[in-house]
Image 1 (spheres, rainbow, N blue to C red):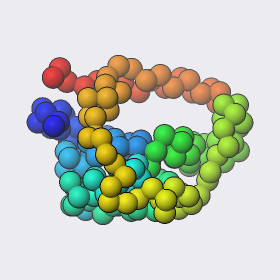
Image 2: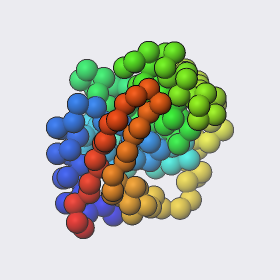
Image 3: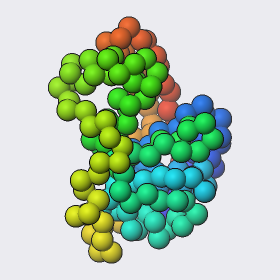
Image 4: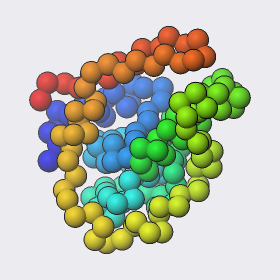
Length: 167
């Protein structure tokens, strides 16, 4: 189970952030913190039924690579790791233009799927028993620790700090 201190930290961080993005089952933690209540969101399709069942206050979208919703579209959730890359490129396109996002995709040798609704994995992976193992929140929490540096080929030098409380 996720510790209450972690959920409170996530709720506070989400309330203060201009934009909140999750990848894969990270949406489960944000939902458990109550930050996605009443918001459209998605998650990894292998865990989808479990997440949907455990967090019913969220408007879970079963067929989407990523979903943007909430006040001013500030919550973005993706269904998996590759979909998270698509989502990140969509944010780059929104902020600085599609040509720059395409350039980033080319430089990292990634085939960018620009259609948030084109989720080829939804039909085959969503099912009542596809997620056999328990969600390993300690792995997800582990990814929240540390500093993520984003140095884009576009001349940005942005540092996003993601620090989890001691737990």
